[in-house]
Amino acid sequence: MRIAILIGALQKGGTERVAVNIIDHMLSRGHEIILVTQYKKENEYPLNKTAKRIISDITEAETTDSRIINFYRRFKKLRRIWQSEKPDLILSFIGKNNMMAVMTGRFLSIPVTVAVRGMPEAEYPSALEKYAAFFIYRFAEGILLQTEESRNFFPPHLRRKLSILRNPISSRFFRERYEGERDKTIVAVGRIDDNKNHRLLIQAFARLADKYPEYQVIIYGEGDLKETLKEEAALLKLSDRIHFPGNSDCIEEDIYRASIYVLCSDTEGSPNTLIEAMLLGLACIATDCPCGGPGDLIEHGENGFLTQVRSIEKMKENLQHLLENPHLINQIGVNAHKLKDIYDPQTIYESWEKYLTGFKK
Image (cartoon, rainbow, N blue to C red; front, side):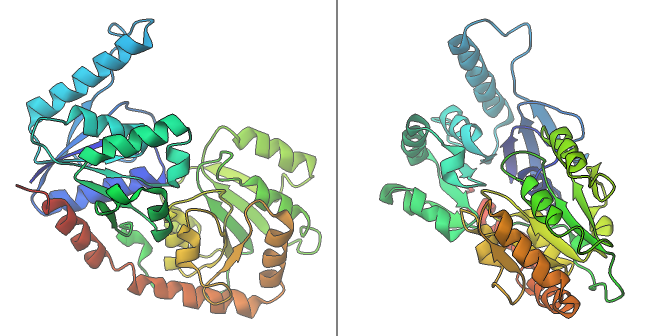
């Protein structure tokens, strides 16, 4: 098949990582891939060289002071890309991209399937966006979700189009669990913004830092709140114990020997970083956030711990429970590592390929 994938860019994030993994697999299976991104940004995931890439945004010379004219030009340019490339299928990721993909693909005899990656209410926050999506998605061939809870967002007339596929995870995270003495580190991975809410970990750790002076916190990632959180760590006199090393190209090595992994998000789909940490066999604590991704992965007290969204006290309690019981860190990690049986790469990639090739006419 000749498959077009539409996404904003390939900067480092969970959705972009899933897209790159799918591209690599589909190319390895002999399919053609045309990646269409609105932008090209710095620090992107590397793209397979055999994939064709097209930038869909209008140029500076084409941009006017009128939002309506700019929208019309973007619409026409994207539609011309579909007409020129003639894909067998368009797969789009996230929010407004999804609506644009469906609209620009109308009457071209090209099926369009859209992936809603996070909490649908967050992708379509206003009433206007919500009802626009409900109307436009009538013309999509399929709607991909990450969690069962997400189904509740959609009206009955769209539910026959809904499918759930697990995230494909890089083979780098499928390895034997580290069984030696673990580093005294508590790690988090993800974009440093309000939704990922790494401040929750900083505040919870601050309440325990004196009691566990040997432990460090390492928060991997970049984002607009990074400097703010560094300043907060300084005010708490924890600059020497809370670290922000930025993005990592080998995160599986960086966190492999860590004691605890923490996810603090306010909302998530099915969080890749949590899946990856569990696959490595780390003891994990995650907020039980909508739209249900962490709750789908973690059985509280068995293979991880769930905590209330934005509750510093509950996060502190869960951290303290693990730090006071080193044997529990090991047992929870052993149980988390069993997730590898559910996220078997071959099975998941086959399910994605079966889904995508099922639209070929």
